[in-house]
Length: 114
Image 1: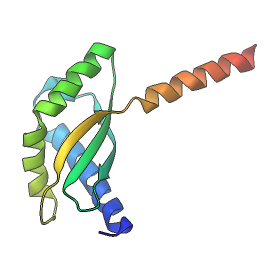
Image 2 (image 1 turned 90 degrees about the vertical axis):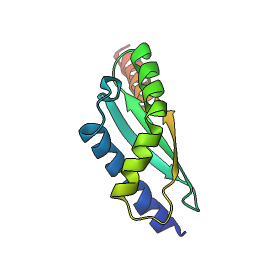
Image 3 (image 1 turned 120 degrees about the horizontal axis):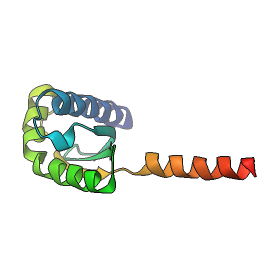
Image 4 (image 1 turned 30 degrees about the vertical axis):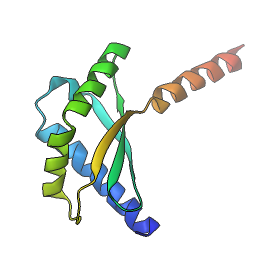
């Protein structure tokens, strides 16, 4: 697959998964999830889903466990919403870059104030 098609499919997968989580998932641990990006393999067989959570560290751990346990359900719902020959296997990675960025900005603001 070319890069444009991979990029388009990654965006489509991200949007569809967000809709599925909002609409179809009843697990409360997944209600504070934001999918930040999806990295699709060149052959489309595997998709790594990066997500952020709000709340404490224990909430993040619970959300990671819930995402991994819901992987089969999410993949089957994704198959209904996307037009691909094969639906990619989903793996989930907690993305802490947003929190890390906020922490760095806070440090920089403190340095400016001093």
